Image (cartoon, rainbow, N blue to C red; front, side):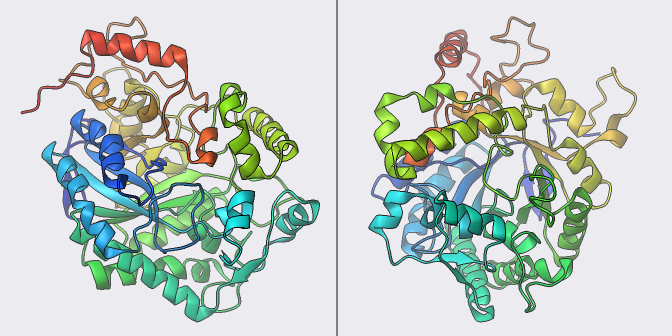
Length: 462
């Protein structure tokens, strides 16, 4: 039976414990201060004892493909080489760091960001296939703009090679592993999903063919970067709108099948996640972010992103509806992870709504004397948190035993520390403007200040 403090091996690399910082948007860009911004964002997690730090989605090409403003690109080896300062800082604390590689495809700013489209009229939207009728309808209604370039077979291979080249540069800069953004409606999910993928070449037409892009990416990374640990998110499109709106989507069984085939291809770990076929609050479940939408300083930037005040209000309304549709559910990927873990022998990583230490122990199957299941009921081999690190950058010190977990802001005795994050999502909406990912909720920030004064985030490193 594993505990959160136990080490784990992923693809030959030993991670010192089973807590990881899941990928988030750092909005660091590629400018002169990009490396320092990434250090400021990511080092606190390592400093607090987190075993694995996953840098958020980075784009493998020099133009297009960004799902939000300010995303970092890793197409330039000279820039990536400068990231060795970041990897060195993470390693100084005994942690490991993986970089998540991404291309947004039809989720990119070329589709939804009005100002970006006006300023970059020549950047093409890359598509796996002609967009499904549901998206074309949104185009005709004026909510989104689709004028895609459908990738040819040769261009699919070229894109896979870009993933390989980016991975090779990252490994040379000291990254310990590669994490592919296989969900959240990025290009990888678009290849996997029958909703998007209607291709008739070797990259479409059957579940096995839709997986071929990930197989080619695997081979490109192995050829160019060696036997670096390689993991990917695995989507199940279960929160997608029901039939007849969306008939073709990835079921839980489909997701389990994808994970099994990825193990055979040679992937070293998987992250099963339940997501939708569109970019919505299924991946950030929680409250309607009223404070973020009512921020007067950001309204002008929202209007520039969405195209007008009317469209801003429509997006806000959709956000409100989705907050009801995707109500917060603790550890919402747990059942999916457990089904995958029962079928594969590689590590399974769980994230999504994990908020307290006891919950982590249950997911790992730790026998705490209160349950009979133990390891047999384990859902995963590592547990990750994302938004809580916006609220508490040094959160690991409170969650890992042997550090400062006896101090708890919620008034408990410290045996089951919980995060301060309230899943209010006021951190996420401003990111459409390129604003940094930080907690903006006064009550949470006040509690964090109290914990800092009590020394909850202090950690004596051996």
